[in-house]
Length: 522
Image 1 (cartoon, rainbow, N blue to C red):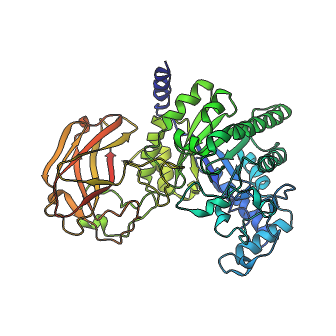
Image 2: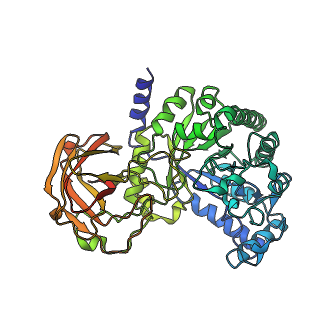
């Protein structure tokens, strides 16, 4: 029965109706003027510009991190609550002076943004990061460290649950009652303060996804569920007083496994209808194959929405070129996604059941190519296998990615590419990014199949172009040294998951697949 329900949801969402787009901004654009008056004017202009674009909802972070807030808080801390060595640091000096001046003047950035959003009929949601880690690099002196942390250093988790980054040990421990009470007090204060202009509230468990010491998340998950119960009850009281509905939205890690690792019991939240919408999301990378459907199976029967998440950053990927010639790969590689990458990711998330799409920390109205792709759904679509982010900590708060794949002679390797639309009336290509042979691919021999259909067998040199532009990559996923590309008969492709099977027949040196995509053009 659940599979039939999900199929019905996906079928309904695949209709060619506009994407429901939401704009989420982290608050750093709150105080950007040399004077409070200039900051206010620039903030109003920013919301005006957002309203002129396709987004219909605005999520605005109430703080810089979790503890330095952009309004005159009585619970947390404001800019300028203390002076540290960063006040004279050229990288911070101007920002701190602007923010301290605005805070001293009593500026309330979320209210300014909310009132301006209301003027333009944008839905407005204050957003709060539950355990932001940006201060962890230098917690005793960092500008984003708040008074509560300084006075409750014994309430940190003490040991990082992610061995690759020790700094997480400084995050507050949600097993401590005083920590939970503090965070809820901020949420209640903000809900009360913006009750007249908001359409609900967003609680961000994704920046960052660490709340308990190593190995303690499962036993303490009920404590965060209890916090959500209190937040839901408080918001419902505001909804009753305002005589209009209020949505409680949560941002969470990208898979149910990652949520469980963090102590976030999504099944309990949805079954008990504590939330109205949830947004699974990676930390910082555009995702084409994030398993949104597993959230939909839990949430939809309970009447809870699942919203996708789109970032303005990807792996280091050259633009796609049907001509597949050296000139296409002569520029420096970039992490900025193209409109075609955005459209492919949006179609995939919609196909898996997302009712809307949140644009996170990217000013959508400043990206005409991306706006055109998302609003018209015309032109090229790029459906990629998601690369790991350069700080992915696999099987903690990020899921294990399919890439890179080490090719060993004679072994068949399988990659799954999601195509979230019917591509039967299009033209299509398969492109593989390769690394390991360096600048000579003359002796590389491959067999490549899509959904059981062979598209190449034998020497790959004629189908391969070596990149000449400046390369960048990561230790997790090295850069593409060359691309092998083939046209694909569209009758080979499926709407949904497509299997790419790659067998290395011969190469002089070890060879890795570090990118894979199916690109579709009308």
